[in-house]
Length: 469
Image 1 (cartoon, rainbow, N blue to C red):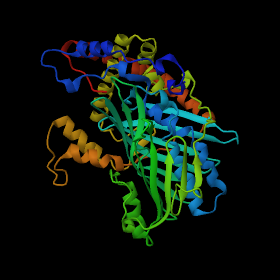
Image 2: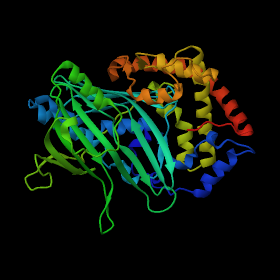
Image 3: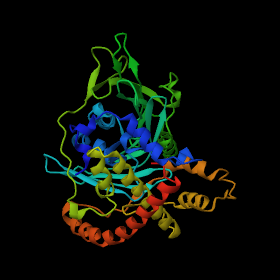
Image 4: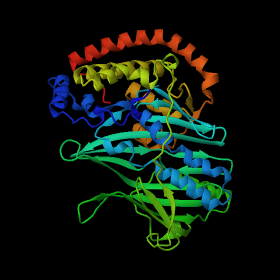
């Protein structure tokens, strides 16, 4: 079972030990050490990876989409999906969030599912398909309710002053029998305030958009931070739902591309001509509720279309004998065991082994030219991946005019590069046996790689070469 579901254990709110953080950094430093190659101390981490947290967050409110089954009105369907989109930024387990998850490692996979009260089952399959830049490919499906949700999500974590900023990029595409919905990204930025000193709290901040390919409805929202005169911190969301001007197929394609484009920091514009006809004004509070009204969402007549659910379903996980070597739970097990027991030195040591193992695996995949292939996902157009890998491997500037700065261009284009689900995992019953076979076959090869990683990590400890995670 993933530790991400445990929201009550002592490690959730364990104070950050600054001395332990300093020790972790000091143990890595050598004369002339490049600080960009220093591994992030596990003292600042939770015992689960970002891909596990993404699964937990996207799955626990997935039942909100079941309302689409009997809804015939396009605006009502749009509001259902918008409600699910807002539910992704509820403040459930984040109320106690004082650290960050691990960055997932290349080829890390994760499975979970929910057995719902109506007899249906929703599956989640995730895989880390790229390490530089970090991209997680995600697939969610429910056969009974006939929807799929797919995403190629990029994660980045930056530290500034006393804050940690977790940025998420890349579109999320929900396909239903009626239409396709495009989220410009899964969530706005997640900002953890007062990381080192002060009272820690989490806030969401940034723009969000939602577009429907069939009804051409378009929502432009912004989540912000406000502090009241009494000192209370609020996390409001505000925006506008438009009727897009798209009429032809070309205009629809253009509108969808606009929805897929990276969001800007602009608040909903007063000039509505770029988006279409404004239909509804929206306002709400993260983790609570949201209202819409044609004129004034603060009026008594405003309609409450979304209330954040509190009775959340339980996620199920694979049994140990079905876990392949690079499943999230297996990859991080030794690190997690040490971290939960508060043995930070051992946790740091185990994390470096995971990092060293990733370098060996990445080198192996690069040599075999398989950087665009994963267990469950593949890149339809591997060219950007191959170009970046060639550039990183040879240290050259590629002679292509269209790639004057290969790495920079790749970073800008990857969030829109969709990794496609291979459709090779369908149900617990039919796929368990295959996973058990794979777990046995792949464990032996991983043990060999793990031994090499342990030797590489030990050598890195001596010369100061580490991987940033």
